[in-house]
Image (tube, rainbow, N blue to C red; front, side):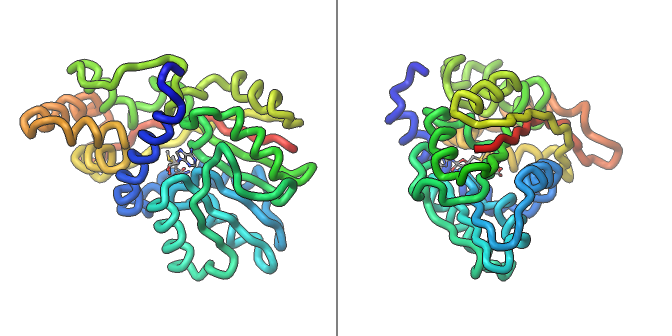
Length: 284
Ligand SMILES: C[S@@+](CC[C@H](N)C(=O)[O-])C[C@H]1O[C@@H](n2cnc3c(N)ncnc32)[C@H](O)[C@@H]1O
């Protein structure tokens, strides 16, 4: 990446702190839409009572909260994220579900994990590693905190073209010359789209029995306005561009982006957009 990693981390952190309120607002909907991926990850680590599981870049903690139900009695889930407001949302959700006794939510950098060596039985990270300035450092850290034979399970988005639910807004920014400069080597949602590259990174970090798969699912919205609102609320990039744009440009952007996904609107107005993610499992 051409951007200084320290500057990138700072900018990314601020973006995620700002987006956390939107993630919190939409968490039930997001949890439901992405359940197929959560289920793949939970099955991949096969949590057992008494085990300790770490979730990295957890956001509001969808996957870790499912795991928490399975490690009782005696187990623990450490829900972590770099953004403090995401961690607060995850902690509150754990409380709402009566999981305080088994969930510990705390801010943590995925690139330098604040846990002793061989401290956990499994690590899950959904749509996190590919956003990091040094994802390979995060994988090595992941392996360090896993006990020998422990399992990591991760998800990373497949190609941009296969994820119109996320790319339509970015394409509209591009078309209007409003997209931030693009560096092909920079971290980002599609930086880990290549399944062979995921396998190679895991092997390079020392993981064994690496398996990479793909999960296709759909993301449903009540209507096109709901699609746009969740995009704006949950995407740090889109939020930043819109905050700097004047109201007329914002309206044009919304209309242009909505036109790009209009072909997915069903009778009655609901929208169902395809999504494609890589998923991987490996052993320490
Ligand atoms: C796309 S969201 C995914 C959230 C959640 N895992 C999910 O699947 O719904 C990415 C998350 O990664 C977190 N994140 C970004 N950089 C991070 C870092 N360096 N260390 C820890 N978390 C980070 C963000 O705060 C955000 O919550």
